[in-house]
Image 1 (cartoon, one colour):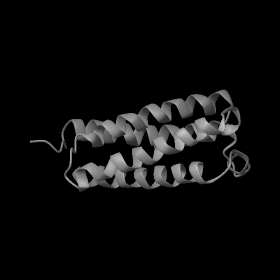
Image 2 (image 1 turned 90 degrees about the vertical axis):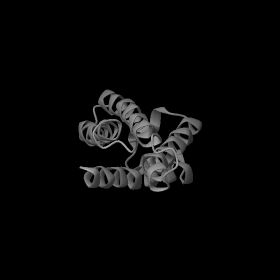
Image 3 (image 1 turned 120 degrees about the horizontal axis):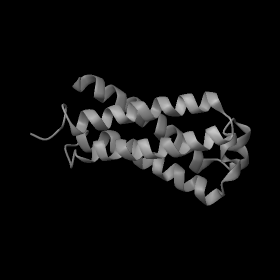
Length: 126
């Protein structure tokens, strides 16, 4: 189970790092043209803030445990990802972007599994 949780956290970290960097590096127009249409209703500052949150989430899912510095931050970061993905799923559902809702809910489920595993049976404490 520990290895599976590391793999899940690593995959989520890569996905959120890439997404966060894209949101910070590209303009809103370029992002929406590339398929991120759900960002149309948000301001540039909000998009950049979400990008920062995604990069922080990516870091929090892996680095605390890998560096053995406050590994309790891993499940807390996973809870943050769950919250972020819940908001994203609502946004996609309102826009009737159902394939994006499915993808978002998949990430939410993986983050919830990570939070459950790291708070519970595969905790880094003890």
